Amino acid sequence: MVWVTAAWGACFVAIGWGLRDAPVLWFAALRALVAGGALVLLGGAQHRPMPRSRRSWALIALLGLVNVTLALGAMFAGAAGGAKGTAAVLANAQPLLILLPAWWLYRERPTRSTTVALFLGLVGLAVVASAAGGGAGAGLSLGAAAATTTGTLLFRRLGGVDVMVASGWHLIIGGTALAAWAAVTEGAPQIAWTARFVFSLAFLGLVGTAATSVAWFTEVRHARLDQLAAWTLLVPVVGLGLAAVVVGERPTGRMSVGLAVVLVAMWIAQRPGGMSRRSPADRPDVAPILQGEASARGGGPARDTCAGPAQKDAA
Image (cartoon, rainbow, N blue to C red):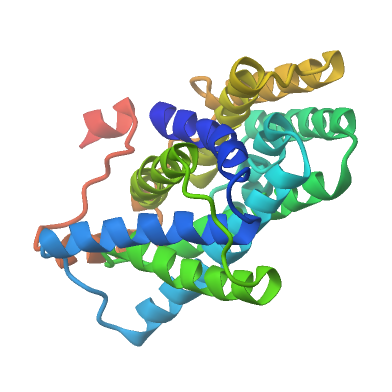
């Protein structure tokens, strides 16, 4: 999760570079299509199994529309409508948004420490947003966070489907819809294929989307959602840091205070004992999904890779 969040934080600087040479929605669509195409080709070369049921394809299509078409479109538009560092903060409000749905849908009850972290993180993000002056960029970035949260919750339903295949096809489906949206609103793509744009697109597509999607969705199946999503609070640290060093966007004093509050919230959420160690494989609603995934790979019962020391000793 350290390299995943670092890559996501760097994406906001790469988006800022690429938007100098391409329209917002066309750039977002190309990012998704490059990432999806790379994963589908790699999955085919490795002979990974394709989804068989209509339900799986329906969930993949819905995931693409939410997690790619809506989330990437709002993320790119948010970065275009505001400072890159601010967009990095607001577009990664997922830890605050996922807490109650994870409790309701998957019975991952938050601890007292998690609840404290939720409110602290909310305060920190509010301070950052107020320091940035809000505006359309802030609202779009928060919309991207809400869409990404919905996508994470949806992926939990895709038990038994290969992660790389599902990631690749959801990116292609969502990217195709995003390209259609771009064609209607922005017309024919007017893109300057400069070295800067090609580098930005390659980094965003292959590293910031393809690689991170497989890593993220793999962890979504095996870790508590609140604990996993809390890692994304590191993304603003990277985003604001790179924006200051590379782009020259110096955070204001109030913004720095808000960021510090967010970091404290992450420390509370991730410290030992701050989260319940109950893993998805221990829960009756998720265990069949993980067992189905293991069967699809031709293996035995799914192993609980999230068990704590006490659980492993008992086993």
